Image (tube, rainbow, N blue to C red):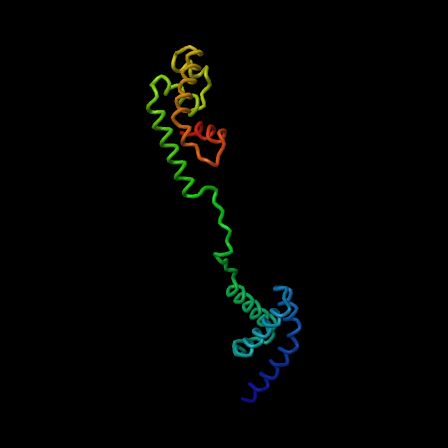
Length: 184
């Protein structure tokens, strides 16, 4: 019992001398003087509680710094930044309503293209949907270039006539025209 008393006194003295070093280390880790002081207090408390785990007094500093490290890790785990859902700025490129509107427009364009005469449907799908040039379409369908242009003109006019009322109110004609051309 007397040796424990002397060991305890020796430990108290060593802890007191190590306190400034522990504080400097903790402060360098966290950058907050008050938190560093709390970490040192927690380290000293745990060192006193677990002093029987110190088998080799020559490794006292390493043991003490390890306790400080563990206290710091516990603090970080407990204070892991939690993101408040109210603070999250949710930014969506498209809303569900916009996606539904787009799907409806696509369906309407497809229906309108489906009622075009086959010759016009072939030309408009090759040029506007597949991006083929007039000369490529002429070659693919084995028709004159002028016929490609006239069929395309008639098909676009019919699409314009049937689809002008589906244009969203907040977009310009150019946006709708571009949109209609990009439907696949």
